Length: 224
Image (cartoon, rainbow, N blue to C red):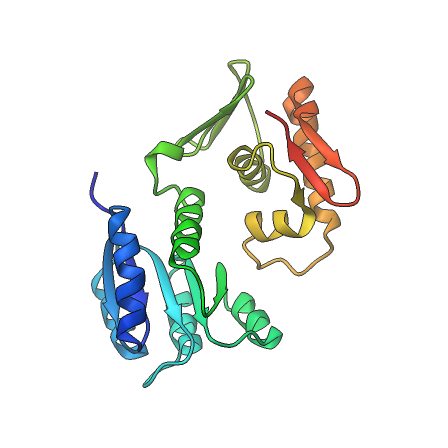
């Protein structure tokens, strides 16, 4: 399988090198850009980039401008890297369609872990194409779910929600975390939407729906 390409954009060479080294060790191909203009050139010349790590404060074009332009033509996952922790910056990022938001200084290991989580959600890692638990089998590439070998019909968000539960089985997940993980920060409505989708998912899973436990005062946990 061809190595997954990741674009790292930062005007600090040491930061790019640090992140690149950790990603290379995991087998990823890392492309680099030192400013916003270079980032767009690299992006348009490599249509198979799987994730972009994008610094905010850069010369020529800042991260917001780069993100806006990329979002006009692509939904490639974008992880913003910033030295600022202003809530307004985070909200702007989410409005522009940013998938993750990490404040400097950060641990390169955490960055790698988040990149891998994004790749799992977007189907770039074969080892995560099939998720299963106690008779529930979810096939990401075929977008199919079976319960005790019988196929069930799920909406797109129900499918994404079940995949998220399976990827985090045994972990208590808050409603906010589920919104962030399944709706990718682009949903600004009431957290009760999670309850509505969980209720529908439980119903469609039949007796297996009981595996999705309510964690009172927090959210849900898939037991396995």
